[in-house]
Length: 265
Image 1 (cartoon, one colour):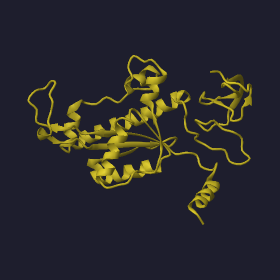
Image 2: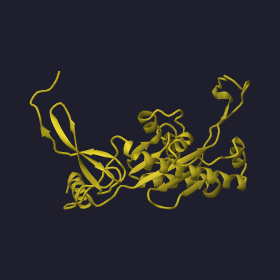
Image 3: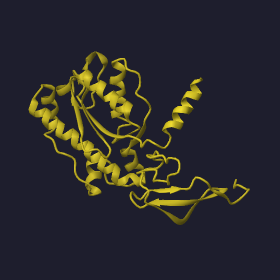
Image 4: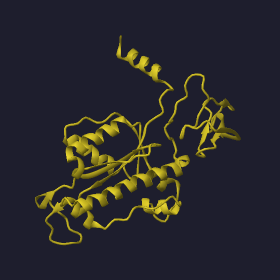
């Protein structure tokens, strides 16, 4: 039996039976340490660079599950925390974050590679920072402002940079404050995801239909859909459109009707 036939058999067995697993996560990192001459516009050469900041903590939550998991250097040890983070990303089909494409994911990838780990299994990345920037015109694109602007909630406040230095020193009270702060970011990010999910273009299909079942929303999996009178027209085809009455997401039918044999130049 070939690899191709094995893959086809597995795909047939699981097609339409698994709702994608959505993981929201956020990391906190320590500062870089270096010797500096000035406090402003300082160019730091490698010989004055002392230590790179490492990941301090990771909070994560599976969508529609109540618990938020918190991992940290203090509670789990650094390597165990990174191994568990790898397991979480490996299990996830979709990962939701805020500015994670630029920061969180590359930082974790660096930690994985340092421990000699191969990449986790592929997942779809949804960076809400990119969604907010591209779809809206907020006065600030920071998570704190987005949460308050949309009336979803607010970021947990912390005691400032002193919190990081106390955590690095092993202060148990500081680590409890860090846990509350990190967990709060994950809850806020998931709430924002739910609120603006209908605005996310090319959202992965979260719940493929099984044979004989009705279509469901590609974003939230609801079957509370309605056909609209508005059509989506390409240069040569016209498609019917459907809107989800749960999340407000718009979709178009897969099969279109040819409306022209010509195409504009």
